[in-house]
Amino acid sequence: MRRRLLQLIGERSPGLEISTGLATRSTLGPGTIILRPAGGSDDAELDDLAAWLGEQPGVEQVARKKSALHVRLELEALRAWFCDGWQEEAPADGESPKAGVAMPEPESPCSLGDARRQCVGRAIAVLLGEGVEVEVAEVDTRHDRLRARHGGSVTLENLLADIRDDSILLEDRTRSEEFAEALVSYLMTHVPRTRRLGIDNEIVGQKLTELDEILAAQALAEEKFGATSPHPLDLAPQGEDRIRAVVGLLESAPSVRASARNQLDPAPVNRLLRLAAQAVEAARDDLPDGDPLWLASARTLEEALGVVAPTASHLAPASNRS
Image (cartoon, rainbow, N blue to C red; front, side, top):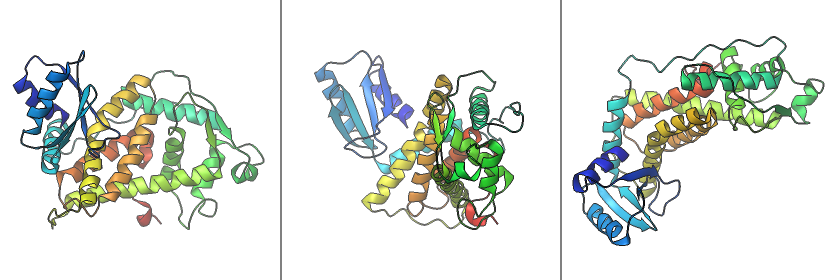
């Protein structure tokens, strides 16, 4: 949708160089686009551009913010512009995202520090298409039930066993080996690789719940896209904002992935995955069944899982696990 907006501006002012971004916070609401003239711009020129944009079809509101403009699109334009651009760049039907690059397995028993280096290295290899050596901070196990259960020292094998054991962490569900491995990878990549990672019983349980919610959001998006009985789009203002939040996160996914590649750090993708899953779940009753945004959501969640929790990308959500 940002590219479409730049094309619109380019038709009016072919020589004007403008950078775009998505506002993390704006008085215009979620999904707001920020326009910044490259090299600065005088007030009169920016005011003229704001007035012109405000009159264009599909533009709902334009607000002047110092040396930038905040642009809010009408909801139908927002959805259409995003979906048109996304479908042009999306993989063809049947084409799967880039497969993960295999990494050497550490010797057993494996320390949590070694496990983190392995998980981060694998995620970076998926992002780059090749393995590189990077520095990764250590893992600290805090004094609590997790550490006490294992006599003061926790290995990767201990952590995997705890995740698989339904009596240790949460609820009465047996966890598969693939889920346990995915959770460890998700846990190990959720903070920047240069920051020490603290692990205890509470954080493992929290990340387990998050991964369940992510898998449920992915399943929801796939189910909604494949539905054949669409309902009309008839929204309250809160529902419109929930859809705008989904579009904004999906629109940001390529930039987040590029940032993760440049930083050699999967943490930005991990954060996007959590936020996108929450936004998809929040919009479950707002978006019509069969809407292209459901497919974009499912693909975005799958690709992010492929980076930070590769063995989870095809698991069933928790409610279907036995």
